Amino acid sequence: MKDLRMKCPNDHEKMVIKKSEKRMTFRGIDLKVPIEHYFCPQCGTKAGTVNQTSAIQKGVSDTYRKAVRFLTGREIAEGRKKLNLSQETLAKRMNVGIASIKRWEGTQIQSKSMDHALRLALRGQSAGDICTGNRSFSIPRIKSLLKQFESVLGRHILKKNDKMLFAAKYLWYADMVAHRELGESMTGSTYAALPFGPQLNNYRDLIDNIMNAEESTAEPLSAEEKRIVNRIALKFPREQMVYDAAHRETAFTKQPIGAIIPYSDSSELREV
Ligand SMILES: [Zn+2]
Image 1: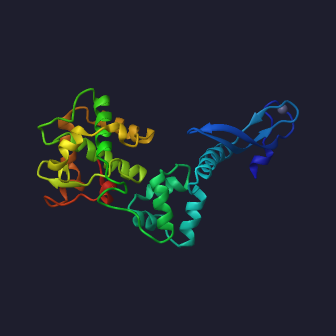
Image 2 (image 1 turned 90 degrees about the vertical axis):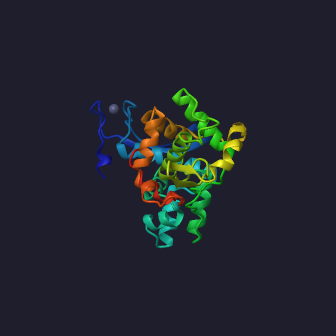
Image 3 (image 1 turned 60 degrees about the vertical axis):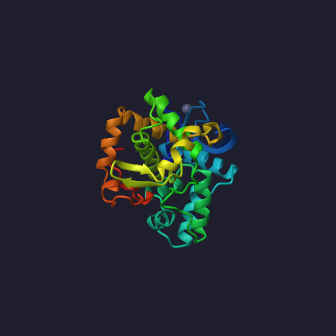
């Protein structure tokens, strides 16, 4: 352990390890996170190594997950190994990307629905759904997501008589990128490959309901989801850009016309 030889920068003798608990508020929850750092008994200088700093990040994540009764990163990894599953097999079983499993076993905190799906998968059941991207379908959330796009883009994309030609492309990217990076879509929508691009399945029956939906009844978008919306809006400031990009995606082009585009292809997106 090289760490044990850490010297005080003021040329004193070697520093000692101090363990304590740090109180902090994280996502509205009061936590006591175990921390460890070096301390010089002569002058009081404190220092942390890179390992200690990343241990604190992991401590925050796992202490929070314990407090809200989610599986911790270690519990996920241990549960997976007990079943003799690779990260890849668990990812397939849940219809998420392998990157999501790696992040959850590290410091990224899963959502409540993904925590549920993880528990099912680690019990040997499958909870993933490749048509809805692991989330229940919510029309108010579609409205709320479109409003978020409109506020970033600074113009209307939800229009009465354009068959959601452009709105559907923004929605598709948001749902697919969220599935790829967070393990679940934002709206639970199912998309079909139509001649004019990826489109909400049965969009004709949905348009009026979306226009009239009350977005305040939807589960609010998380900070991670808003970041994804911002990225997509910055990438495609004009409607024609999102339309053209969607037409270039193999996740779209490989499907026969009329087929459902599965969320399991979210890892194939190239433009975002
Ligand atoms: Zn010192």
